Image 1 (cartoon, helix red, strand yellow):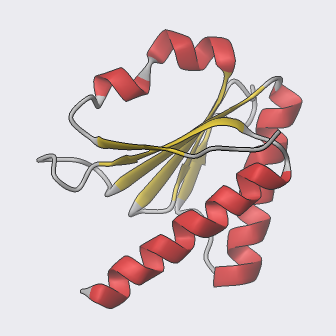
Image 2: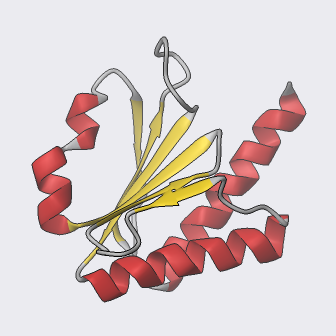
Length: 123
């Protein structure tokens, strides 16, 4: 079991690098493992200021994860409009939002029972 967790830890760390490389904001990690009937173990949530930045974040995550871990998303949704892109890496799902869409859907509140980790950025 520990190997699986270390793989997930490496995946999340690499995703965070990808987000930070293109200055994604408002980075939160939701740990869903204690909640019944969830589709994955973690959500990584962040935002960009425009559809261009949202797509840059998505591309940066994909490149980092592919290069470092030889992994790719099982599924991606929402790339065409760049307002809310969902990247499904099976155990970890990344949500990349534009700010107004993130505020509207407020995923952190919907998953209020999840353990929340806020990632501090220096930009």
